[in-house]
Length: 484
Image (tube, rainbow, N blue to C red; front, top):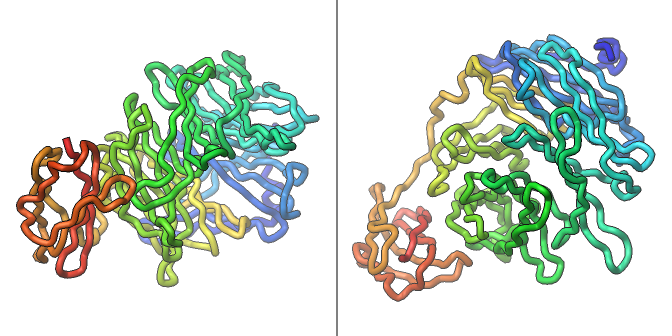
């Protein structure tokens, strides 16, 4: 399959790369004749990025029959398109990763349905977008699968690919939600599965690795009987080894587990990043919660109000230190910007927040990937709305820029954990007006209006609580404490 630039002219795409101080942008718009989508981006050895653009005929709502193909682009840090590779349908990219055994190569995975047979494809290309390998593997035959594969694939520590296809429920009164899961090596040979897994609830989502020693996987769902959040753990042969109920409310934030972003923190804990509504309210908050591997809540942090004009939380990952990095887009006071926030891996408090503004923007931004190159430039892959444009924003030295932070109030709870009493002080010029303690469901268990140097908690049951401190200047903040 040769590279073709004529398709770019045929689709009448508009290109603009503009420098904005330490910012550059690659931008292409496709007009209202096409719907475009993207999902993955990777870096190259020569400080460029490669990403995918799926092209659909604009017959909304689009179906697989409207799919034209996928374009791979290579773009440098100045926003210049260096190369492109067109792959005609069927090739709907689901993920990509740097190839672990082939130098300077990227493997793109995709799913497609041909004659009611579900295929999984591994396409390997060099940094110059030359095709190195292209393998398609049939994994399942099902007309229901053909309508909505919902594929997700991950590369594990043994350099094998685990792929999951989410299935719509069967029709009828005995409808069952299920998905297909399989493990393949890099040559496309099936190692385990494919298995059809019946799920314990509605709209199940395969989330990825639960632990690495031993290797286990997890999917999240919503129980149909009690509307409870649920987690199911599978071993490397896709046998169910553990099922856990998760809370449907953390603090006063309600959420659905299958809509959460899931992060495997280590072999003892995992995190959920939640966009949830405040109990009995339309107010929405961002919440980061940490659980042990038995599903017990270890801690959480809620410090971002999403109620006023935001686009969404798009990316969650861990950095080299294990801290949680969250990328979202916001729209406030007529300005649209990208926000990147870092939460501490231990207590989940926010360590820093940085914003990117003044980039070429459209009516709606979705950030699908962000990567930091070896030269320190950070790239953000943006699919702008209404689904007609693709943009990559390059920001120099983003990872090392210290943005001016907002005013914070830090409390000192001592001791923490505690068994008898605890004292509270703050680093603000304001004075403490009141302190209240709440259990993890948000229920008030203790309130105190004075004497904050000695707050008696001896009568509380062991566990985690949230202390809310109100200052006389109106500020309110929260801190988690543990009663031994």
